[in-house]
Length: 179
Image 1 (cartoon, rainbow, N blue to C red):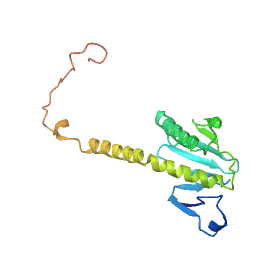
Image 2: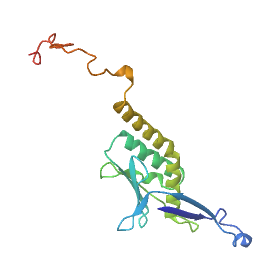
Image 3: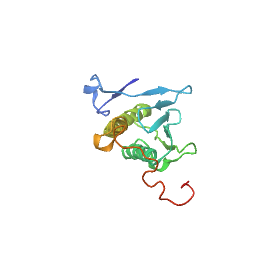
Image 4: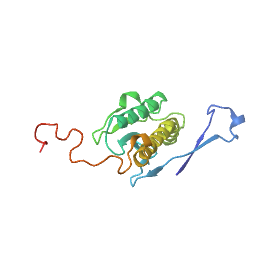
């Protein structure tokens, strides 16, 4: 879904600039609306972000399992939103469902649309996270490559190691498994 946001760079301008078209910022985001009108953002590789426009609440959930990586991603998001004035600092708290964290978007002044400002801020946060996404993807691809096509010095060909009834530590151990 393409999100397009119009932002007036100088809202207190004189009548001379009223006819000027406001600056338009466009970006793409994997987002959808739920049945009750919430906006669900699924772009991040570790977390899902849910924004409730009616109550101006932001919730984050783990995509797979709750871990330190997921908590770090949630923490980075809320630090970014608090630092940029999109979420009120005292409202950020741990939720009660599956390690969720939530915060409150303040009521905007000056005719701003809280939903547009929130979506733009999350879009900018995602742009900052792109190098992390790329690193994770490259790491996983390298890991699969190591599993499926390991380096020659870490493998042995079939028949390279001769067969024997007892090898290695088998027979030298004492205890339950030494039959």
